[in-house]
Amino acid sequence: NAGVTQTPKFQVLKTGQSMTLQCAQDMNHNSMYWYRQDPGMGLRLIYYSASEGTTDKGEVPNGYNVSRLNKREFSLRLESAAPSQTSVYFCASRRLAGGVNEQFFGPGTRLTVL
Amino acid sequence: RKEVEQDPGPFNVPEGATVAFNCTYSNSASQSFFWYRQDCRKEPKLLMSVYSSGNEDGRFTAQLNRASQYISLLIRDSKLSDSATYLCVVERDDQTGANNLFFGTGTRLTVIP
Image (cartoon, rainbow over all chains, first blue to last red; front, side, top):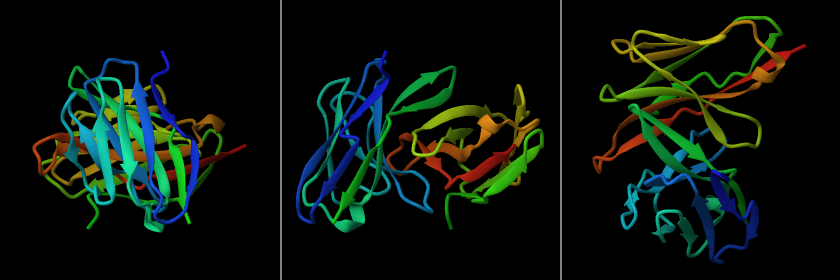
């Protein structure tokens, strides 16, 4: 099992450009998440999808859109990138077993917006 | 006020030392508690859950004090491989009613030979 995979690993954009970050999981999890991680701040939730066909805003959704394409895939789109979106983006999926909310993370995408 | 607060460190300790990390959370409605480990330039991974009664996993012991809204992690007999950032995490229902995780900024540990 690959777990949670993300593409690309690195990306440099110019202000105003758009791009989609891809995420896929092969663990048959229902819930998937997108976070960003910035220096001096904890991981912050951008959007999540509790199940296929549903998406909801997290703590910092402005400037982003998401698509839950199917149970495996959850993409994050930046329509018009801004320097404030320079960050490391992590996708995660959730296993709820025995009451433990364990989230499995992908390796991350390091995005720089110039 | 941040939802989850941790001392960012860094903590530099010799091999074999015992080191303790503390964390406080602001929302009394928080339901579950965890420690995640994040290696440099890697993704976070679950280290252990934290229960009110306290729990131990090998050299790692986690404690929760709900009254004080305080969580701790104790690492005994530190190994070089323990060098990482330790993230304190709480779970609660957010404004949409979903059960989500809230992360601290992490405490960085370096174990020195």
